[in-house]
Structures are given as structure tokens and as C-alpha cells.
Image (spheres, rainbow, N blue to C red):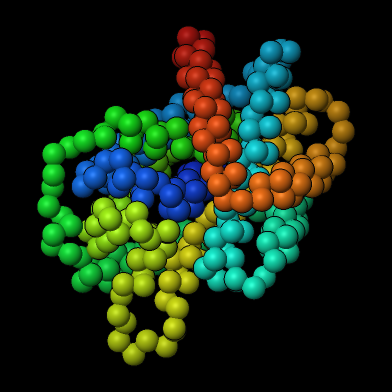
Length: 341
């Protein structure tokens, strides 16, 4: 496999884009249901937790885990975690594509095509994923900016009346545990020449907190708490509320859907890469391509087992606990790094 080296900028961009994609689908509506009119604040605080743990992970080095049997067991845990969360998000991505864009296309075809693309990307190395993220970042930001500017006209005055704060602790905790992919930063020092981009990662996480808080606040102001519950994907459907003059595109929501597809696909690409890469370091035999092919086939098989979206969401709830365990590992390695400094 080629292109093993990531730049510091690519690490920052990947952290931002990966977590943006998996956050846009359900977190805003869940935060609105739990936190009411303060949901944007709670989302921002929860995402800041990702920024802190991301900075700690980037400052640490997961390479020390290869030196002991217990450490290799942790690597195996992270590998399995990436496989399971990849299967869940592959199911959610393909299901959303079927609902929003391709209702007549069989799910198996969508899942198989995406897994084939993911494996092809895996063979090109992590730097290829980093370059794709850099290319996509500007279009993603431009679409989000356009959505914010044009959606302001659809704001309902009654929806922005602040009520008494409630559900803050539960909402922040849920958002904090939903930071899938933060643990990837434990291992980027092996891919970026040993550099520790902790400050840059924190800035990327803080920027993501502002973006998601702003989008959640805008969606709440447009749809209200009841509308956030009714709309299946409120952030993706924001553009449906915009009346563009001289509109030449019948489905303007495809722009936000496109942002989500690109971002979620990059996240899945990372899940497949780290599943195979960490498995190779835990087992210490065999080629990376064989692990990548095996992980891709397992990803497709597990996705097929999650036949309904409800099953995928149930697995997602279990993975929240795995994220909590991953946060404990990140914190422990960070403390070890600080004591050894």
C-alpha cells in the first residue's frame, strides 16, 4: 500500500470532515428533543468534548500499545470497534441514500458499490483520503454557508423564544459519547512522521463545534421542536425551506445531502483503514491488503445483518459505551505521555 504519510493539515481536515458527516443526521433532532430551545448550546458543548479528547489523542501515541499483550488487545478492541461502527454507518448511509435519492435501487447494490469503493480507497493509502478531504473541504464549507444565509428567511419568530434550560447534562453526555472516530487520532503519529498536531486538532474541533451549533440553532429556528421531531433529517432538509429565484434544480436538498454523503463516506473510509491497519499491528502477521479485503467483506456482511434502521440504531447505542471505553484509553495514554515527558 502506498501513500502512508499524512500532513498535519490533512489530520485537522479529516477530524473536522469525518465528525461533521456522522453528526448531521441524528444529533440535532435528538438534541432538540432532549434540550429544547437550548439544544444548539448543548450540541456545541458536547462537540467541544470531542475537541479536548481529540487534542489529547493527537498528543499521545498509540504505538506503545504494540509493545505488550494487553496493548495489542486494546488495538484489537479498536479494530473491532471500527468494523462495527463502519457497518452501522454504512447501513445508515445506504438507507438514507435510498430514502432521499435512490428509492428504486436495492440496498445491497448500494452497499456493495460503496464497499468496493472503500476497498479501492484503502489500497491507495491514508494520504489519498487526506487529499480527498482537503479538496472537499472548501465546497462543503461553501454549501453550509449558503444554507445558513438562505435559510434565515425561513426562521419563525416563535421558535427562537428561549425557555427554561433543561436536559443539558443528558444532551451534552449523549453528544460527547457520539464522537466516533476521535480514537483514530491516537495512531496518526505513525502516519504523520511522529508529529503531534494537538493544537491544530483542538482548533478543528472547536470550529466543528461552532458549525454544528449554528446549524442546529438554525434548524430549530426554522422547524421548531415539533418540526425537528417530524422531519427525519432536519439539517439535510433545511434547503427544502429555501425559495431560490430562477431555480433550475428541482431538488435543492441534494446539495446538503451531497455534503453529508461526502463526509460520511470519508468517515467510512477511515473506519475500514483503521480496522485493517490496527488488526495487522495486533496480530503481527499477514499483509495489510489481506486485512483490508477481509475487513471490507466483513463490513458488507455485518451491514447485511443490520436489516433495519432500528437494528442499526440499537447497535449504535451499544457503540456509545465502546466510545466511552475508548475515551478512557485516550485519557490514560495522555496521562502516561505527560508523566513520561
